[in-house]
Image (tube, rainbow, N blue to C red; front, side, top):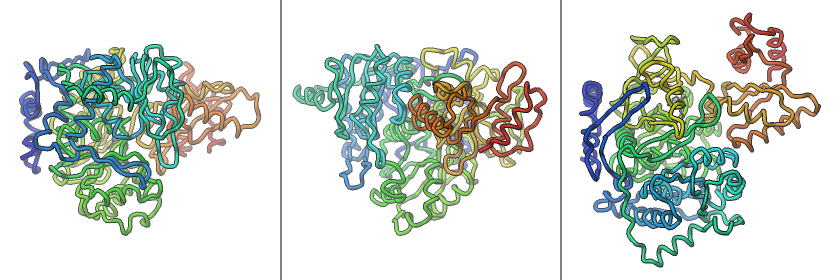
Length: 637
Ligand code: WTA
């Protein structure tokens, strides 16, 4: 039995769940026993949600890469660890066995050391989806450097904010990245970002697109040249740094309802155990299966379920550089066919956009290797769920609708593939170790079934957020202060008659656009940077493909009259400040915003109007100027 802690049937799930509640420490100690620790922990858990102060496996020493690489070399040395499919189907794919990956990680870890990186240093990684990205991430973990991966779609300004917040000393990037028919000039974006980042001493540039780049003397070096130097020295061994279970493993920035993105911090021991446990159980991974997660490593899904979860389990993980619709909308099905993919984990947005192309791109593709399907990132509507089930899974594959967050580190509420009875649109039941609780506005627990509430978690789990980098108070305020002694997710949730959970969406000012989290305040700040803008308010509205679209209400100084041009300029501004993912879908120019007498924008009203629910705006009597609402209604796009 490859994974002694893998649940095999519903009884076992119930038993494991019970045990995880009655004796959480015993439960997680039993799971953690199946990993390689340099030194075993003294104590399983210490916690206090008030601070918050959460520690798992105290005193334990390990390196996550020894668990993802070294320990597999004996039995899985020649097994594919990463299969890489390039953007262009004509280009050759690559396969890295566990032995190959180990060698390359050690080599690049040596490169990092040669460039002055030490344990505890922060390294920013801004690369496309090539194997070197995985190698860079693992090489950081190998030497105890803290990686901060920034998604390739973010702008120079966003990168600079993240680099400064974490005070990164080194950046790893590429000349460019291929994405569909686009070629994104990563290095040039980094050059712009670094004008405001004095902490960065070195930049390592990996060749991918051959886009011309400028290399700054003394700062910029080529990945390939650095590797050659290590080879010349005969590839000296690169022993893994011994890490404390609670040492930081990585920072990943994510949007909240206020201000700038925050750096969610995960630590070595608990995160490893949790990513692995949830991967092995949710997907019911069996040795030898080919597992394909379509996420980008720039997001938490890529961290936990392309890299750390699968690799720590000795799985074969498929990494894809391109997009689902290029060169055509059959791309994911061609890849499934080509590599005989057994498990496919993707996002509702991708499914909905592919649905739009009809069955042409699916027909005549051999999808018979598929055994399990998964969905993540946003609520999946029933229509998309059924299409996925019928046309991709051919009615024989279970679908796991996995609910979780950057902050949770791994999957929290989900069916267990083939074991939990599924219900379209429902994330169903909590995994062992996860104790959900619904509360009302006043923080009172909502008990029983057939009820709605705000989703909280009342007991720690090993993969949970430890802090927000450099600002622990922000972590406390955002997640632990709304309701006493609870972790607040920011999501609304229904618990139905069967006790099944259905996530209904964010209850705070966070949007979920194509599965990407975007704060409304962030978009407003970006819009307000445009010279002609006086004020703006941003809300989400239902969008057929993206899940949510971005609707912006904007007040301008009225100095220009070409409103179409102003719209384009605003969109361009948002793109430059945050990145193309945050571009508003609709911009409505207004002369005022609905505000309370204390000056607070009543977003509830703006949201309703954007959603088209004009007749049911609720109480507007507290508004400073109720007439403004009528004007906004008339001008709705
Ligand atoms: C949403 C992504 C409904 C939710 C892993 C959450 C979901 C936010 C689901 C986290 C799901 C994620 N059903 N909603 N299965 N999965 N969400 O941090 O609103 O990028 O709070 O993590 O996505 O987004 P994040």
